[in-house]
Structures are given as C-alpha cells and as structure tokens.
Image (cartoon, chains in turn yellow, blue):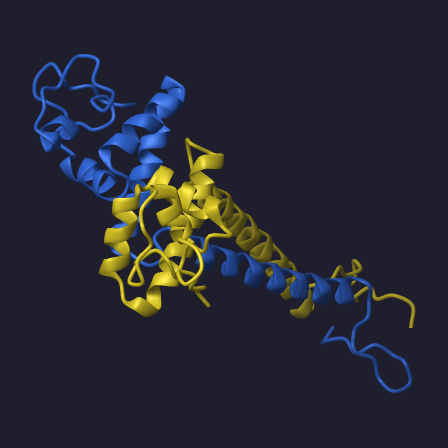
Length: 131
Length: 131
C-alpha cells in the first residue's frame, strides 16, 4: 500500500521542491520521506509538473501503480540514458523469440519420438534399449 | 538515419515550441517536420527541456536511438497512463517464465524418451508401436 506520512514530515516530493506539504498533497501518499531518491529520479526524467498532471489524470486507486511504473522507468533511464527501460524490452523480446524457437524444435523432436519415428534397423525393426 | 530538414522548414520541435529552428538545433535531426506527433508525445511526457538535456548528455551517435526510445516510452505512456511501457515488460516477463517452464517440461519428456524410459509392461518389456 501507499504510505502516507504528511502528519510527521513533508513527503519526499515537497522536501525536494522545498514547499509546504499540505494534507491534500498529490505526491505525499506515494513519495514517503524515507525514499528521497524515488522522487528525485522521476523529477529528473519526467519533471514534477508532468508527474502531478499524470497522477491527476488517473483514478486514485491506480496512482500507486502509476508512480511505481514511472519510478521504474526513471531509474532505468538514469542507468541507461540511451535506451532506458526500452533496453529491457528488447532483451526480453529476443529472449521470447529464442525460447519459442527452442520450444518449437524440442516439440518437433518429441513428436518424432512419440510418432514412433525412432531409428530403425535396415529390415525395419525398431531399435530399443536393454529390457 | 536521422533526417535533417532545417534547410526547408523548422523541425517538428521548433514548430511545436514556436521558435526559430537554428542550424545547430539539437532536436532538428531527430524530429523532422513530417512527424509532428513524435515530438508532441515526448514533450507531453518528458518535457522539451528534459529531452534536450538528455540529448546533450549522450554521444551524438547515440542520439537517434535515445530519441527513438524516448518516443516509444512516451507513446506507451500516452496509451497506458498507469503502466506505460512497464506494462509491456510485465507481459514479456510472464511470457519468458511460461515459455521457460514449457521448454523445461518438454525437455524432461524428451529426456525420458531418449533415455528409453518408455512405458513398460508389467514384466518389464517395453511397449512399442506397430513395426
């Protein structure tokens, strides 16, 4: 669940933006003061105003997921300024293609075995192992 | 390759921002006037200033990839404001896990066949298909 901490100290967003954290602060439930980097990252990549706009555009019950996905994207972009989390998508897409090919090949092998297309002797008898 | 079009008309970014497109415009090679939506999207999600900062932080030969990954992320976030392209990552991760499980199971089946662990009769003889 989102943590709400405006009763004690300003949220990480208001602390970063050096403003008073009001009880209706849009950031407060999702940017607790003990996670200052989370806000610093989304601020650097998206800007506080864009994050605030986006939070106001989604349903309150979706805001935590929205913040977490923004934080994930921001962190990925800071780690890899060229590809951001799109790099992870490319890696995963290649992994899916490789696995699907391997699975198709393994299934084809299995079908050959289950259809009794096992190696046969010259006179057509099947070769099987020790009984 | 990135297209450069400042000789004819302002790039999509300068047109959007209503400013003169100078020959050294950082956006111009990556935001041609015929793709106005590309800049509108990254501007909406990241802000023009953040995009410009990011482009200045990466090597010139990496800028086209950086712009394209930003455009991809921005479009995904506009389509899905809650999850953006992180939604695609979740889908792909689940797909990788499912394919890996299927591959493991198929490999295990195949190993049972190739190790001659085929179904046997009560007296230990193997059952094989018609000869």
